[in-house]
Length: 302
Image 1 (spheres, rainbow, N blue to C red):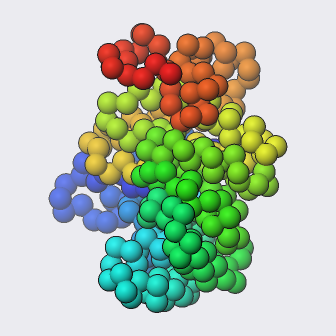
Image 2: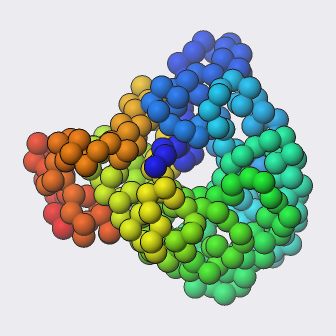
Image 3: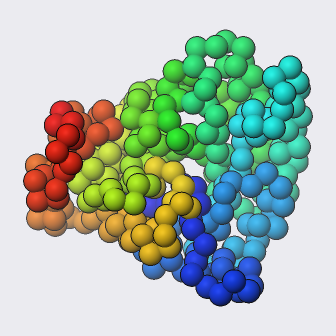
């Protein structure tokens, strides 16, 4: 079991003239201190200078550094006119393929492709085909690095696992807070592939107790005979809009949950509130908080 950040962190509270390396080091140390591994540079997924960005982070830490990359489907959807989007998507995948090759050659062990716009594919066969084609082009010939597809900010399950994992990804990271139906993707992912459960909310006032995180990890491990060795815990999405101190506390709670997941059953039993989450609510991507944690009066009790 491992813990990691999906998305970005806010700017550390350093002077406005702080050098880039100082900001980067503060981001890395916050993750290391919380117990996260692999770590990341804490900025929004990039689509340029990938090898340089990764190398700058790796020089400052002994932990494995993953590189987050903006996927071609999302990038072209944001930048291109509808009529030109198919060509733009494939062209972007081709450019990114060359950048990924440079990244792998630099020694990057983990590459995470972010496709937030996958939530808009649905049952549109043309869009499904475009996603498949672009990702097969993106990963063509890429070896010697763990390749992960990250789906955040909503439900992407309508696209179907055959579309989303058409390319040879080794793991799937999913937002289970904004996209609870992504549990369907978890259940449909072959057991030989990893699952990263984005189960820690990016909301400033979320509870962040260990119970829903461990339930999520346990449920993912139980699917398709996957086992805990192929499961990780993560933030559901970016923490960039939070105050720095709030984001750091969330990283700490995530790290605490990861350590608890590795503890003995007796230690876990003593540390968890059995009223906090049920197997049904975990499977649906929801949690039932105990009264001691102060749920909202109109919260869904199911």
